[in-house]
Length: 146
Image (cartoon, rainbow, N blue to C red; front, top):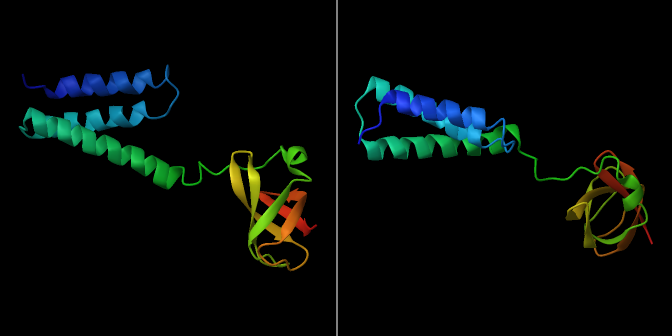
């Protein structure tokens, strides 16, 4: 059985509308992939295997593009309003930090989903030193030697 262009168009619209019920923001890309296949099928006669392959490739490219271009730092946690729970935590520097240079501090237990955070300091501190979080400035932790 060959799928007509309108089968792909209806399937694409159903997937896009289903995104309203399933707020994962992934179904929309598969729906748009189906609409691209609908256009391709309406312009040329392509087989079922090619249609499915085109749908899969376009859909996955759209999903990858979304996470690469529009949401590049989605996996990074921002400290934001949770500064009170972070103050006083002790960690170890993995990269040197200086007054005008960023460093990195690693914690034994993850803080807000990450065990390594970028940090700043008022003094030069070498990697391997134990430090304490004294403030949160934006998305950076301000640390001081113990």
